Image 1 (tube, one colour):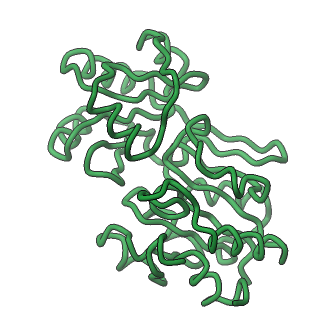
Image 2 (image 1 turned 180 degrees about the horizontal axis):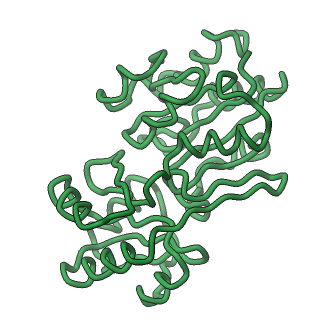
Length: 262
């Protein structure tokens, strides 16, 4: 019996085309919640950057954010894992030396270092993020403790940077940027932390995703669901492949497993 559902946001719950949650998914989550199923978000976004799920916010019991670096529930549970300070200093020096644009998620603040048109285009057009960026100096946010660096780099440059880091991992759900977090941080371990807190067994969970950063949670959940529009590399690891987000993928999968009735 599935007791908890975990949903990635971009490309899973929310369409990249419309920047909205399909009506079928909203109704499906309402139906699941009415049956007593808990609902969680599992996203690479930091919580302040979650601007596109208002339609289901009252249904949500908790969040896995920044790819698992910060997880919390509405009952007060909270867990965060910052990047090792030595590695954070290496990344900061790399950003300064190369001029690479990067989103830096600190414990308290989010800054966009080396802000340029490419970064604004990726986060503005692709993710529909439009707000006033902080101009806090990079060193100041690094001193807070960094939960995630998201540099605008290709895979080759990503691998070159990561080889200099002893305590970090990198994941990618988009060809334009990478998410760098502390080693051991991922959405799958975020799911385990929430299961440990709630007493829900991981066999009683279902997780949905479409990108490379969803692979750990798809593999560790009781049922892992890949969207029809998912990266081809994660589909072989899923227990079930549903239709794309814009083709009622969430509702179809929940109906397939009997969590809701259609």
